[in-house]
Length: 141
Image (cartoon, rainbow, N blue to C red):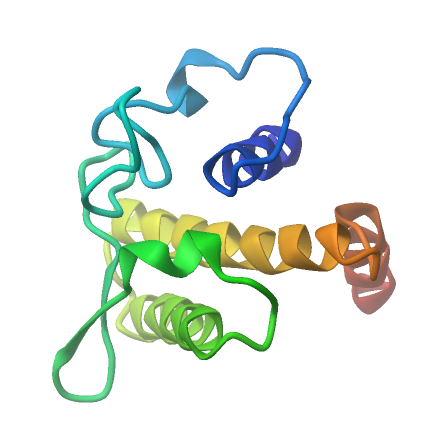
């Protein structure tokens, strides 16, 4: 769920997250995107499927720095570039009519970076995920 994603982002950002335990597929741990081995931050940004948070942009692959999950605010250049890279990757996968798993993975990475920006905004008292969802519903109507 979106709540589990926001909780995962909050945990990696060091926030005190008191919510229901995440389903097993969302439990953070070795090999996860924004997980920790219990003794510190994960040395690589990896998703549960084992894929690194790498995106192929125009030309050469771009590595999203692991510390993007700790970005201070939405204007942080690393966070902005990671969001841009995730969006570009999702578009590229759609344009090339990639395998459904590849498209879903790219959309999941984009959603993770959107959740990061929402988390930063929420921490700053600017807006929350419910506000973003409300705007998304309005866009569909």
